[in-house]
Length: 113
Length: 111
Image 1: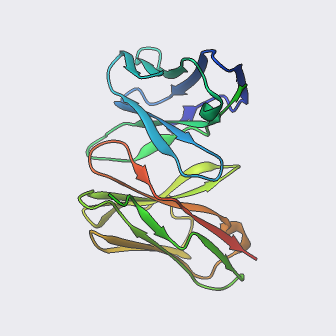
Image 2: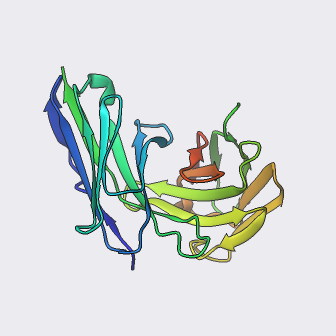
């Protein structure tokens, strides 16, 4: 059973701090990795994708991928109260032409003013 | 771009009734996904279509659930008969390359 694991949280950080969210996956052939943000009562929205080992930065967000250790992380710099949400990690193995994503249960983040 | 459009936004129905959820994907996207989300189980993939053809329906809970995609711009998810344990938020998502765009979801309550 292919799995994606995340700490459920809640992760609580003060405003302006760095929030670090982690995700591990079991399928070694996984090739595409995504972070989605979901506000309460809303649908998930894609905030970052990463495909190669290393870091990928987009504004205050940095995704980090380490395929050897099978983990992917999301750093949020200068955290704002508006970042308070559940962050979902998703992984795609692309076995054949499979577009199916395997999802973690999400980490709840609370940024305190 | 109007995004992925789902209807209805909320549905309350009695046990045993038929429920039909609708989805219009983003124009040009060739993959469509139906998900169910609950607190306990998170996001569960029910079925996905590629170029209107069902590719993986292994997540469909049982024969009470069925999905169709008659053309590139429309899909339905039907539950017949509905049961209280079907209560959840149902999301439709579409994709062209990688990553999905989700619709706003349908909150289904079966009483």
